[in-house]
Length: 304
Image 1 (cartoon, rainbow, N blue to C red):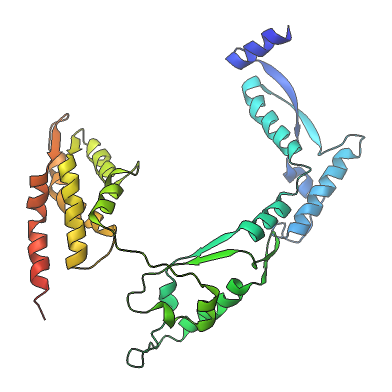
Image 2: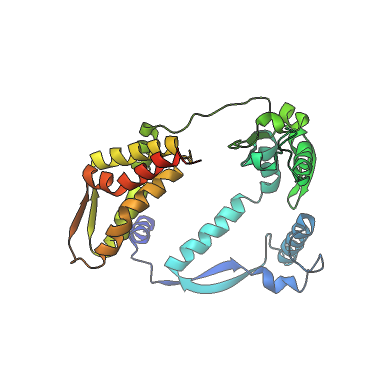
């Protein structure tokens, strides 16, 4: 009965059975018949749509609707994926995906521009930059942020209602050094605080694939187990925050520097250890490996 076949199909009992399935013919066979647009690269959306329409017309010339098909023999397991793709395509036939995507971008799109301070020049007379291209890049961005219509391979997109978010460190320049017109189109300004010791601790522990986990997995390739005590992780976060204050604030990148200093000797020693060995990183080990870094940073403040 139908129910018994359904249970066999769901359990995989029919996976090896061979059946015949009508599958759409590959577009390569029809490419020679309806080749439009010169190189056939498909960059022109109008040409691609016309080719698709003509292929469907060719399939319906014999009294059948839809694209041309051919009968193929395959196992039930292979047929599942083929039939799933055919059904998905049939469900999406009445939906203009490109039109929906363009409308979604125009109404709900967000563009994030990072490192915008790199295209700013200081307006101070003494530190005036010789790079004249920075202002030119800002002027090129201005129409996009203000609102314009741009041409893409999927059609024209209006940027009037797209949200633009820009960010930058602004160490050597100020946000006021940007073009006044561009400042006016980015009216909401938020200044972020530097990462604290607690923030660095969260970065070390909360992400699934955090920096400490990467080191544990790396050492595990040698058959050695690496463990970080919670006090050691706290000490790493404290040291990183202290170095950011005393040397240069490079944010969470400081964690890579600190951990590399701790793991420098362990990485070489792990290759010589017996399989199954355990290495425990405690607070004392962290302080030993980073003591010379802190001394050097303290002295650097007094060097002219």
